[in-house]
Length: 139
Image (tube, rainbow, N blue to C red):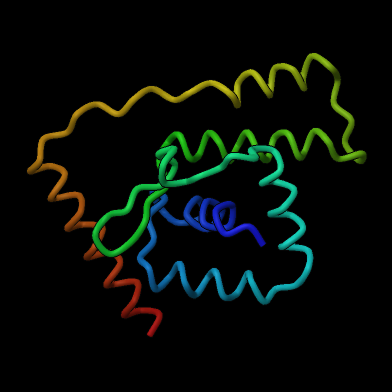
C-alpha cells in the first residue's frame, strides 16, 4: 500500500480536505486491512507519479491537530485518477477526450493569495472546533 496516495485519498474525502490525526489513523487502519485490492489500486495510482512526496511538493499541509490537502494536491490526485481511468480496458475514450482530460488535469492551480494572520487563526480555530465535535460524536 502506498502511504502517500492513501493520505491524499483520505483527505479528499473529508469536508474542506482537513482531517485530524485520529481520523487519519483510523481510516488508514481500515484501508490497510481492507484487502489486496486497495494495495493494488494505490500502487497503480502511485506509478503515475513516481517521485511523489506529498509534503515537499506542497500537496498536503500540516496544521495544528491534523493535515489538509491543498488545491495542488487535489489536482495531482485527479491527474493520477484520470490517467488510471483512461488506461482501463472497459472504458475506451476517444483520443480527443483523453487528450483534453490530461491537459486539464495537468494544469497547475493558481497560488494561494496571502491571508492575514487573524483570519488564518480564526480558520484554524474553527477547524479544530469542528474536529473536536466530530471526535465527540464518533466516541
